[in-house]
Image 1: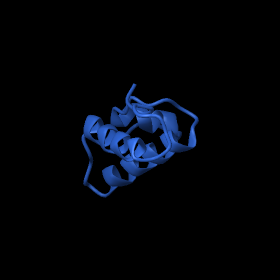
Image 2 (image 1 turned 45 degrees about the vertical axis):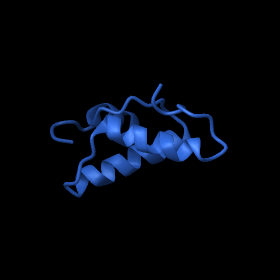
Image 3 (image 1 turned 90 degrees about the vertical axis):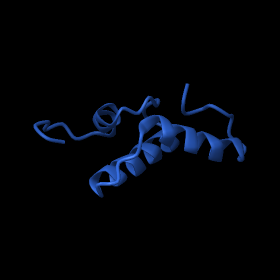
Image 4 (image 1 turned 180 degrees about the horizontal axis):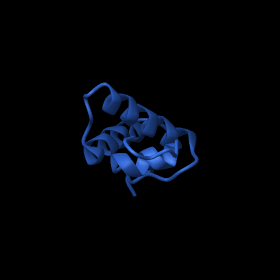
Length: 69
């Protein structure tokens, strides 16, 4: 991140515009995925990314909407 010496998933989450909770394995995985896409010059729309993961989680045992609320 240009000009920001702090390195943390929370910082990246805010920089990428993801409205996710912090300090959970799933949330950290989504943030890491978004950061990887950003660094590969294929940044994803934050709302679309959260919606995509919500669809995956709805098909699993996780509660729907756990990420986008």
